[in-house]
Picture 1 (cartoon, one colour):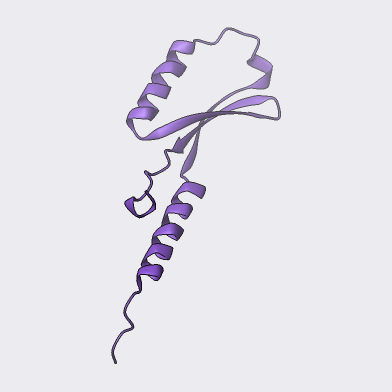
Picture 2 (tube, helix red, strand yellow):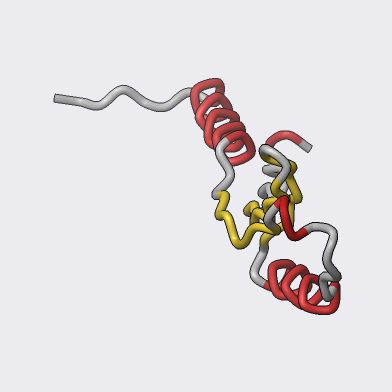
Length: 87
């Protein structure tokens, strides 16, 4: 049985779906939490700066969220570059 050829429209649609999925569902990892009850104490930002630099080298962005008063530090995979078909 002969397979149906892939049309240029279908190829573009597949590329768009793959790109949209990679942007929407980026890998996210909780790295650490600054507890609410200890936020008033001094935190060394040097350690945070080193971890942010390391995340950048690994291809991740750092996101800081306030969840129930705790500060959560998340690593989020950087969005992929726009495919050449869309430029």
